[in-house]
Amino acid sequence: MSNYEDPKEAADKEAIAASAVSLDNYEKMRSSPSQLVVFVSFDIVRSVRIKQIEVDSWFHLFDIFLNKVPLGFPMERLKSNGDEIIFAQTINDLACIVKIIEATYERTLQAHKYFVDPKINKKHYVKSTIWVAEIGDTPKNFEIYPNGVKDYIGHNVDEGFRLAGFASANTVTIDPKIVMLLAKSIEQNSKNQKTKKCLENIVFDGYQYLKDIWWIKKEGADKGIDEDSKQQKYPLFRYYTDASEISSDLTYIKHPELDFAKKSKHTNDDIIKMLTRTFKRAGVCKEVKNMLQVMKIDW
Image 1 (cartoon, rainbow, N blue to C red):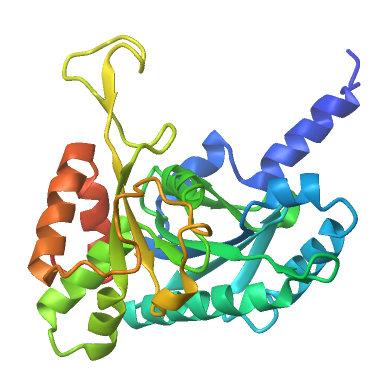
Image 2: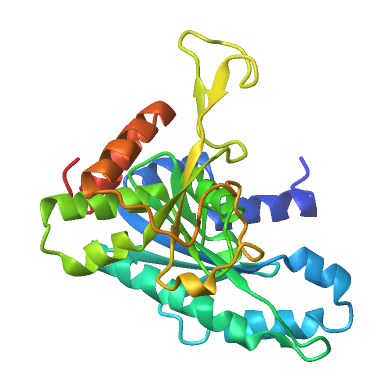
């Protein structure tokens, strides 16, 4: 019997083993203690348009973005998806999330100052998104190492990338689960001024459908997703402190009737009730409760 093994098949097996995505490793990954990983995405506003219109200068702008924006940012750089920069960091407490939000906003505002096109004297702008995923004792998200390089895959990881599609210039788009973590933390400790101030700077900006996210299968249904399920809308939240940095021609707003420069005055209880209803409709209450438990916060 020949011991010959097709080189492509051998390479595929090696890649699967290296990525740690296999049935053999599934239970091992599931048995790891749960932890929360926060992701941050930076992207250039209207990047595709810039490449199409500013043919002679776009590469210089993107080179500055990919090499200068990450310098000194207080998180681990995970990867670049084309012209999008992704950071990731395991967090142990809410204070860490607050610092990440503030640092992301500061870097978002700083970044556009790097981008002045000398040919047309025009500034370009950056948008950013922050989201969270539970890694470990859950079947939804995993830390993997394809070709020995750390990465993440899973339900909440994809959710964050979909959310990033609704990011807007000079603001930080925030995962609603992070908003809930902040609000519940304040509910338990109203003296936490830094968390309260952070939440006060987060604005609700309506609901949107995120492609393939928050589909609820009808009870007793056995057919495909299109016939026997319903998609729930996803709440958009923005963080900013300086309304003068926001203008209607820069933001990517799906709700133009909202005055984006005016913060909605909602109490902490209002936010918790609104998000609780939203999470129930989407069928993700258990998922959010698990995240709260990891942070030692009661539902």
